[in-house]
Image 1 (cartoon, rainbow, N blue to C red):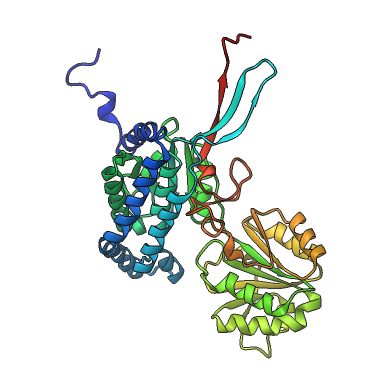
Image 2: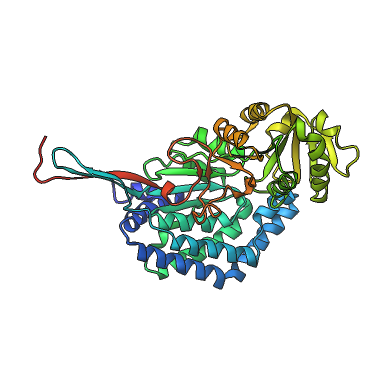
Length: 430
């Protein structure tokens, strides 16, 4: 028997476990809610983000100052930085999520069995979703909105570099959710900034239903290899643009520059350019000058460097490591290939399985490329930057899964649900 002075199991729980328990209770409370209740909370969140933008920006400025003092790269600082415009875009994404159909209760398939039993497979929330992510505070609001809309509670574990921003964001959205009459514990920041808090979250099997890591290869590998909680693996973005022998040159330059330089610090930015040998003479001088104008350094093989002498491009010799690098900066690897099949072979060897694009006027080439390339997204005559939940019409995304189980590609609301079967009989026995 436990004495009056002995600690109860509840007393010995860590802050992370306590948060997970509260999330589990909240998940059970919001799972059966109608769409109207969840949408009202989301709209309250969006309004609060805009109304309290100054508070969020002040916290974000603390993070950015610390990052600069620590010598953090500009690409990471870009991911970390919030502006009034970015907060407005985050709020717009939340409103977009509110306007989307509710996946919970959707009938995936159904039939009446020969014995008269009615069988339906319906979508249900996953339960408690843990998100482990790096210096992108917009993920905090995106993940909260998507999880709430899909009936899940969420535990958010951002990087220490964005701690002030994430703390402010979570405070704002929790207040809004509570004001709308939903449990605030449906959205929580995981307590602590240490590695131990991350490890506790990864070991919270039975309390957390799934973990989704978002960040660099090291973070994702650590979560996949060390977590006892099931993981939906998101991947890094070593994305390729292949310019085929029959490409429209103007289109190819536009797609290349947009894919690489429109926002180089994100996972759907292009990191490698492959050019068919038959079009290299005509295309590469134009492409290299355009990359130079965009401030991009080209890590090139011998055949690309041979076309660079009369251009203004900054070109360095490519190393084997360049072909597998996700730069997240104004850098791109570039090579000339002998054929479409050689481009595919290069992609198969080095790609992270995120997004690959082909620029071509040949339907046969486009068809073969899309058949042979096994990435989450294959673009034909379009920028790699379109691989995005918002661009796909999903609202904000929870991440881009590069695995093949349950979810693949940009993960919207349906990917945050599981299913269950409803069996309805009339006294049936087997």
